[in-house]
Structures are given as structure tokens and as C-alpha cells.
Length: 199
Figure 1 (cartoon, rainbow, N blue to C red):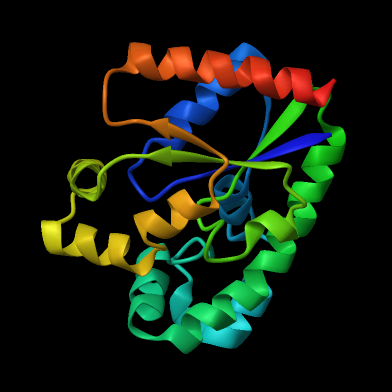
Figure 2: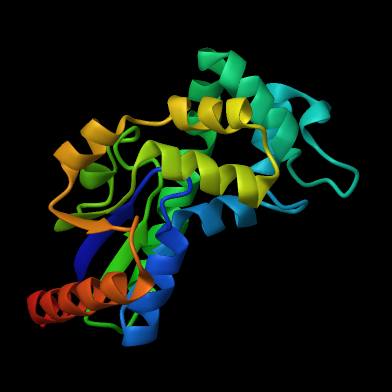
């Protein structure tokens, strides 16, 4: 199956773009959704995460305390690396199972940290599609969506790959700083391109 890695910084609009591709008939594997599933109360990642980070990373229902984990990995690169060593192989395995079940001309694999995790090689991607917008737009969107201060939103943006490094990795770029009609037109064009490549 033809594989397109979908990536972009936080607040760039990846979910909106992914939903449009699916609406047009594309397949989608969302690694963020897989990570959430793996870190529910009975998720496959929770025993290893609790063993590595202690019981304080669980909330009352047994699922991952995302706020506590986010604070831990922002201040400790070693903790971030440990989290990735536990989660990424499980996410990859779950993604492969979902890919095998798809019956679509191509699959989008949404990987927010594609650049940081060498996702192109890990997922054997044929192309990388970047949803791009200025950093100031990202920060504004993250503040509104997550009720964060500008400093908190900027800190999240700063932990991710730079805009320049994402652009360097991309084969296709969708500018999501303008109006939705223009964005949809570009998605339609790329959908046709990916369908042709996948048949």
C-alpha cells in the first residue's frame, strides 16, 4: 500500500487535514490515537510506564496522567527518551496492524513527531506530507484549544522539531494559514495524486 506520512507541529491543523482526506476516501492510521489507546487504564503500555515512572503517572481511573507525564518529559530529556523507548515500538506494531486492515488506495499515517522519531524510515513511507503554518499561528491555536498561556504554548512548540527541519523532510506541503476553501482544493489535488500512485 502507498504510504504517506502526515506531520506538522502542534496546532498546525493535522486533524482537520486528515479528516478531509478520509472524507475523500483515503485511509488513515493515527499514531496519536494509538498512543491514547495504549495508555488507557488497561492499555498495553501502562504496566511498563508505571514500572518506569512510578504510580504517580496514573490518574484515579488507572490511565496515564498526561499532565504529569508532559511536565516530566519537558524538564528531563532522559525521561522523554525512556517514554519513547516504551511507547514507540507498541505504537508501530499497532499501526502495522491497522495498515494491514485498510482497503483504500493509499494510507495516511499521521505522525506528529515524524522528524524527531525518524518516522520516514520506521514506517517505510513513500512520501511525507507536511501541514504547515507560521509558529505564531501554532501558538495562538494551542492557547485557544488547550487553555494555555503563551509561554506554556511556546514551550510545547519549542520541544518539537523546527519548522525548517519539517520543511526539509517534506515532499508535499499544505499551507494551513489561509482559508479552508484553498486548503480543501489542495487536499483534493493531493488525494488524486496519492490515489494514482497507490493503484
